Length: 539
Ligand code: N01
Image (tube, rainbow, N blue to C red):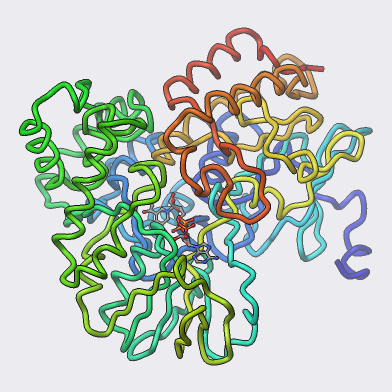
């Protein structure tokens, strides 16, 4: 902050709101709308130059939904549901960004959003019982409540490769793709990382680069997305079925439209099992795992049986058997990492101009001015893309200096992993709702009920003439223990991935989101609210 800016905003001029929202992505936009409905004055401060969060920043080639588009959009407005036409079953980033801009305009949200306003700090004022945020440009604002709609996957991670800044070509992270794009046509491009972002990007850019080198550390289980345009008749059917679509999503563990087969894979004959695997393989999107035998997504025999089916599918698609074996995942259980959906990913490795490099075998030693040097070889490149993921959940919170009661910072408190009550609050940080902690699965389906709950909690505080709500230390302790105990048993805790913070060197290992299914989480939150916000201190 410059001294001029500090002087230019006197105490009287600091903007005051009931609620300050950090971020204008999917949850921030909805929180703003919802808070207005409840009669609060709310304002969102957004780092980007546009709204959309994830769908603003992740504009890398190939970026798209792998949830069905019509299950991902907001459900709160029937008018919006009827007037917006999703063009594809799995919509791409440009369309998704357009959608969120359309929502911002339709509901006149922009008047309460300040773009290009990165929040640097949020400090709780114990005398005034309110939060004060300071933006990068030095401007300040105060609010009784603070909502961090900062996303679970928004703090990009680039490994500390030696010589990272020495590269003379162009380099960028998938999650911060330049708005003006990156010219890749005819270029020698290296991509580090083969998670969901890398898989989408690699497939798309292989069509235009002169040479592509893929640096893979861990092979993934990837399955065909089978995207297609939405025909008019289907569009009409979808629009008539929204109540059923959303009802179904609310019933399933991850808020997706797919429902598990209640049979065990091992309870049917091998022929029946294979018939089901093949039938689901032909379906689009996540049906291949979320409509499968229920125990395919649990550690054990069924999981390994389906993993082997997957491995053989990969072997069938890659011509060179040596390359095929490099692409076949062998070190983690099926479903223990997020499964990327793809549209021709494996066939890319049949192209003459594409090279797969195993960097577990021969690790990257350094980035050089000319490219990448591994233990075994040097690769000359014009462009390096870091598809190396995110410092998930806590990373985006830690980018803001958040200080609560008694001078304690959230970063210090979370140093050994998040300590929250139901993912929404941390003791000692009154009126701060960290809503990026609680939702996982089909994002918008999980986020809408979460935002509803959080905003209703604020209304409860106001309507009952309290001024503060904060998680009790005991409720927090019990919840944190529950996350540790229940979280350790579930499939997505078993591999080294962002789900448990294992992708970031030095980060404490532990499940970063709730271990419960979406319906269980909603029921728990509803019970807490019905019992007068049990586990929270109100004053
Ligand atoms: O990140 P990731 P992502 N040297 O962490 C590798 C969502 N998403 O951006 O597996 C070499 O999954 C790392 O290797 P390894 C989705 O929830 C959704 O791809 O750790 N390699 C891995 O291959 C997803 O789960 C969509 O051994 C290194 C890659 O980088 C989440 O975002 C699309 C390395 C990182 O994969 C994150 O996906 C895209 C190193 N030092 C993303 N460090 C939709 O479709 C890391 N890697 C909606």
